[in-house]
Amino acid sequence: MVNEMIFGYIRVSKEEQNYDLQIDALKKAGCQQIFKEKISGASKHRPEYEKLLSHLREGDVVVIWRIDRLGRTTLELIKLMVEFREKGVEFKSLTEGIDTTTPMGRIWFMLNAVFAENEREIIRERSRAGLAAARARGRLGGRPKGISKDAAIKASFAALLYKQGKSIKEIREKVGIASNATVYKYLKSEGVEIKGWVQSR
Image (cartoon, rainbow, N blue to C red; front, side, top):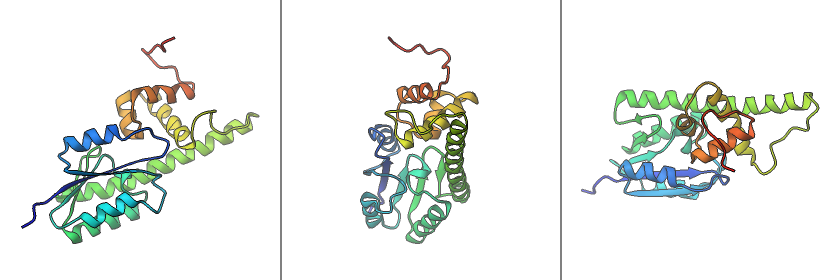
């Protein structure tokens, strides 16, 4: 009998610098083999993701850092969970604490799939509203010089969370930012005054 394997899957967008945060988390979770992908989640062609699926056998476990690393829409994620169940493959998402080996874990998976998609839509809506407001005030709009579109959206969401009293750690986890320094950079780009932090000169 072949021993079950614990596989990890990592995806970062092209704008993000490295996989370190996700790799550390997946190794701590006991992953024996990790598939790494640097590609947008909207891309239909994900070679490492396809390679992961081809390796899966009954009894295996797929571990990811956060649910949106695996799929972009609720329908896509739920369909994938059904396919995993048919193969006898279990699934865990570390950030949301999802574990489909339990009935509650499967329900939590579906709920988080809905939340993740809704969160992305809120970010997109806020970005569009912000640009529209800037144009109405006579500004040209668009993202700050030297910052990508994806980073600009994350910066906007990070600023919102910070104003709601979220910690830097919570912002990193919810928005998917690799380091504290990047959070500070995003907040600064949004004109947010950061309490207890002085920029080095």
